[in-house]
Length: 155
Image (cartoon, rainbow, N blue to C red; front, top):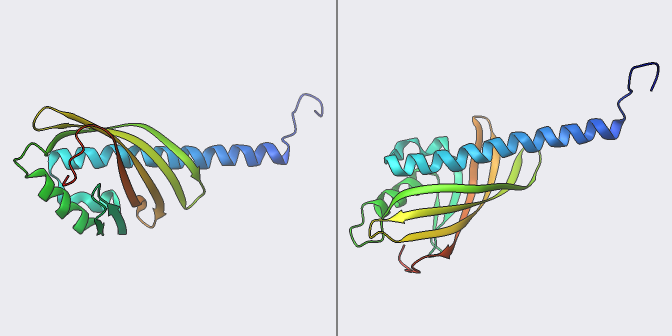
């Protein structure tokens, strides 16, 4: 310290920058996970470009891969119109964690649970990679894993 003024050390500045990067990617991840579920529950399929990057990949629980916001929305719209008890009527996102990040991308894990139309509850984990694009943060890849609930292969 010189007089009453503390001198900031370079490693402190780097640490603060790292926290800010993490805060930005965490807030983006939290927003994207929440917005995704709001759009799905409201059937706002045309707004999926607000969540997914143009070249996003969504791997379903069956292993099928949908590419691009439009294809992802069309598949989820099809699933939401089911009448066999396999339709989720309410989606919830929780426990969002940024595993690692930099200025341009982040690895994110979040838990989800959904109330199905037959009253059962399913829970799982989303493993996402989000990227900072020209239009803001977007999900570039999403890989869900079922943790609890009916294990019906065709959902």
